[in-house]
Length: 78
Image (cartoon, rainbow, N blue to C red; front, side, top):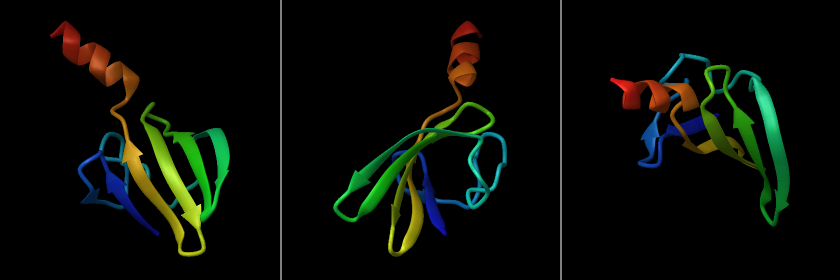
């Protein structure tokens, strides 16, 4: 499985915020949507990072992920 972190497309194999492996089961599946090429799955990592995963015949790729919600909150306080 390949993945990208953030919107810029940097290759990674784990969550850059908590280290959870991308190939492991996501902490929470938020929604699933069928597409012409397979599907899109929105998931939430244990740290709170929201991820968009494309699922198809070639496997699963993380297309984008957000920062954990509380990380943005904490950054604004300091």
